[in-house]
Length: 394
Ligand SMILES: Cc1ncc(COP(=O)(O)O)c(C=O)c1O
Image (cartoon, protein in one colour):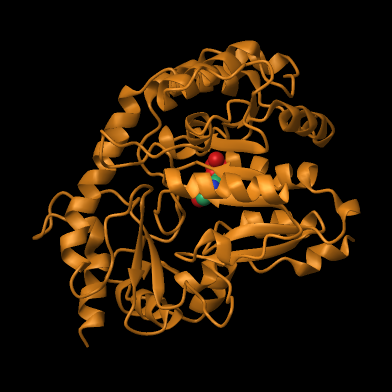
């Protein structure tokens, strides 16, 4: 087998299983899972109806490039959402089966192992796919700690840089100055930017949606999107993680090579999924409602845990990145043991760099569980989060 497989780290949820082995939560308490970033709001009927109405499409092999209609719907959405001219649907947009597989496979297509030791820059903490993609492409992941200046990384040999905005798990959004500096570094060192924007539609100031990579590029006069590919998804935006639908958009030359790779890899989206995706990208009402529901959860939960635990409303996404007064893994284990509440220790999502692990003493709390309707505080679904407060004051 490929020896690079041996370099993969255990996935955070495997680490969580190991951490909780032998832990028996009180049977009297309802289990509350705030560990997985899986949307729980229902998939909108306009998506499921479009899917059901297109089932005859199962009789045909879909093209890897997707249908022109889907590429057009995505290009138009990008134009509307980011206030940019719609990208060229034929060359600058490519449907993918969710952003996870695309973020992974993009590294396999983008890394050139003949150029000496290839390095892949990842944020830290980070979505684990970036690291696995780098390792399986034969590259060395290098990490930029949350909050550290971009320039503090040694960018020599970096061929690909993953960025995530809004960030998982921090919720941080990159601003215009971050993008300008990243583009300058990309010009100087020649690396490709893979911009993971799968949380781009979960923001809580309707007047200030997060800046996207393509939008930032246009604003800085980089209309050809040189060395930039943005990845987005319907999973969080449209509560459709099972649809497996997203897109890559940007630099036409990179997407041409990526399409070639994907043709061999065999990652075409089924025609019913494409029809459902078209319906989803064309509608914003359900996305606004989705944001409203998440905003409601933040409003309910933040006052319960903000003092004394340190956390804050993120710029975007659906996580809280909570500081713990004790070791994060121990805290998470106790939360499960005493209260039947599952959260993810921050250190499972990060690596130690220069003696510092930015996930240490942090928890990632996914605000996906539905708000309860009828307990004394009105937040039955968040009993466990409220418990964080009790623990920290011991
Ligand atoms: C940061 C980030 N990127 C990408 C993904 C992948 O999402 P999907 O493959 O459903 O588009 C996730 C999923 O949780 C994520 O957290």
